[in-house]
Amino acid sequence: MSTEEKSLNFIEQIIEDDLTNGLSNDKLRFRFPPEPNGYLHVGHASAICLNFGLGLDYNAPVNLRFDDTNPSKEEQEYVDAIKRDVQWLGYQWDRECYASDYFQQLYDWAVELIQKGKAYVDSQSSEEMAKQKGTPTQPGTESPFRNRSIEENLDLFTRMKQGEFPKGTHVLRAKIDMTSSNMLMRDPIIYRIMHEHHHRTGNDWCIYPMYDWAHGESDYLEQISHSLCTLEFLPHRELYDWFLDQIYDETKVRPKQREFARRNLSHTVVSKRKLLQLVEEKHVTGWDDPRMSTISGMRRRGYPPMAIRNFAKTIGIAKRTNLIDVSLLEFCVREELNKTTDRVMAVLNPVKLVITNYPEGQEEWLDAENNPEAEVMTYRKLPFGKELYIERDDFKEEADKKFFRLTLGTEVRLKNAYIIKGESVVKDAAGNITEIHCTYDADSKSGSGTEASMRKVKGTIHWVSTAHALEAEVRVYDRLFTHENPDGDKEVDFKTYINPNSLQVITGYMEPSLKSAQPGTQYQFQRLGYFCVDTDSTTEKLVFNKTVGLRDTWAKIESKE
Image 1: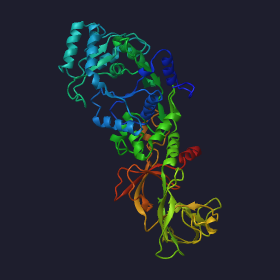
Image 2 (image 1 turned 45 degrees about the vertical axis):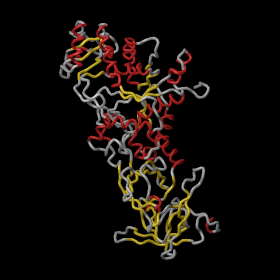
Image 3 (image 1 turned 30 degrees about the vertical axis):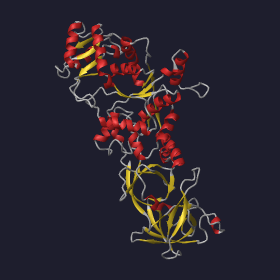
Image 4 (image 1 turned 90 degrees about the horizontal axis):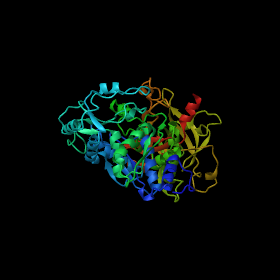
């Protein structure tokens, strides 16, 4: 990478400086280190794009490393989901690694720490240790077990590994400095006892390393050059370096931890714990519910991977945490889908339109373009007949001059078809319109080149032939939370702001070309928005998710408020 190619963010500047100061380009290696204890969310997507993007920019390998040091919360399901998400975003890792790959080496290094007098077994309760920790302004006090002999520590640690003790009876702590201004340096725990089945190592281990111990040492074993973390790990950097000091060999690359700020997304939450709460309490249907901020939820909703990558690139990285308006993500989604999706006709709030002067029993198949943005234009056939469905909102009996759709006595064009004129309505006993009657100009067929077809009318509306329409379930999603920062106030339960209208299930009518539409396929429903075939969809019952509207309707709502 050259600094002349583009302006550098601060992470890229750090890398460039390291290269200038002697780090060989072939020693660059990055990693994305998720915990397999939940599904990845939009915040992880930014971290994925950062690390794998650096790999692409510098032609350097990127490891996918699972931080699987807490078997009580980790499952193979999450490992599989994370791999699926990274690949779906369009990235491929160099090595698939696990902290559990290094359990024996981490244990051996811990034994060396004990032998050097730099670690000890503490037999106090967690409550007692917490009392001795001190405060940011008050130094901690030493454990009564801090000066155990090396022999006793080795014996206890070996027996901990062999499973002789119940959970909570002993921990292994690093012997650093109980008076340090950095609370994390006050004899941090390295190992704790956990009699839990591990998804990879089974029941081989009864003790498991803490994240801070496994993190830097795993980076070192994999020869990661730059270990990029979110800002909350800034206080951990001193401990990261202290642990590396104990094992570092100058002939090898020494990993460098650097931090960037989280980018929180408005109208959602990105805490795994809170996302899990939404799932377990059934506020959503699962981790892949299209209202969730998870990558799997966004995929199911119909967000294209390139839109998420473009979003990550647009917001960039920063040193200060801030809240990104979700409308920017939605803009990136619209921009990408506009280029890639076929246009189709669907009516979601139908009313019947009868063309009274159209020949009874006649049927036409009209040409309709698939995507005007495509380099090579393709077409499909649309059936047309005497009776159609149109959107109820596209008709008013009486309307002012600003209404450019169908009214009595005025003309509009039916997309890809004819110009029609509103003539009369049929109502039920309650006064609701059940049918709109109109006439058509037989010479005004779109694309025919006739004088009538060139006539300018007030508007164009979409339609579906009633005789050929496919009935489909349409799930219209809104934002999951009404508040832009639902977990911003720690005094208020974030679930207070759950939007009761975040999902509306309706019946829509589609053109027949969608009969074989496959799950995951995205379309633009003309004049309505972008929609995606849901995984629940079958050949017997089509199910569509609304991905995003054609315009940002929330901006208007919030400006009024």
